[in-house]
Image (cartoon, rainbow, N blue to C red; front, top):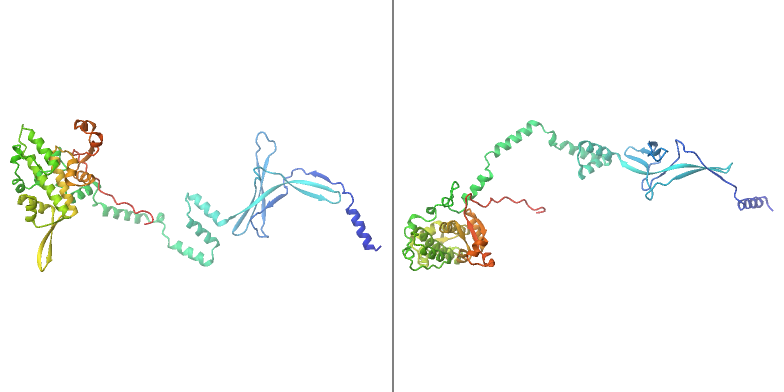
Length: 434
């Protein structure tokens, strides 16, 4: 048998023989225990130097041993690394490092703290400290800028510096400049109208009769002469109605009221009857221009079609129509039309006249049917002349022998002091994304 084979057999016999006895001991806790470190997902340069730190906290009353926390810190010019003890599975586990002495077959166990490494970008730490000191919330743009300063190329860093030089910081503006700007704004806006003045200007431009804003009573708000001229008033005949004869009108609103006035024999009602006759003329004129979609024939044809005195028709054309000249067939021709704004003017003036004959409290139901308009159009007309539009009260519709359903179709336009005009419209902000 060769010497080589003999040696291998001896080694094999020795390996398969019984294991020697090992002595395991636990070393007492020292001030410089070994440390286990893990760096999952964090790659550190091999030459990184780490400094260990220990923090001893006072133990709770039930524990006698002081609690120690260990920390490892290392850094490169741009990245900082920190190793801290982290709980595993919701609690801390104890780890040991064993030192084996082959001569004595002794294993000495030392308690070791396991630290998990994380990394931080120094530029972000510096930025956060600056932000925390000023109480500012940094935007994404600022975060990207800080990151570009620290890790960007030389070209991008130069570009960022140029942008900072050109940026204006309002907080650092000279006080004299800001004072000058404020003074100019005040000077340019001192003559701007207030909300009340603006509301009055808008109201003056609306086609409603002249309003007396200083009125103390409803009958002082509007003057009849601003709606019906004296030449028109003088040719309105109501003698038959005053005698109680021929109490008929194509308007149900007018007919109901002339019958009611004829029953009151205590005084004459000439003024109210003339206003009602004028309202009936105005209703006929409104419906006539509606059939022609605002376009009217010659004045004489309108007078003949409506059987109205010439002075009244002339007043209608003067107030509620606009004239244009058409050159058809080589000859100039006058064309009269009622624009939508002037059609509203008819409704506004009619609303005031109805208030005058109904003691400034009008049920608009019959008038709506006479004009063939939507209730909201007539409601708006009464609101534009300063009325509040209300529902009939239970006492009122009960006294009129109405059902609740019938009463719901009736609206009351009431003129009271102070007047209630619609608020001026405000400009709406544009919807986002438009």
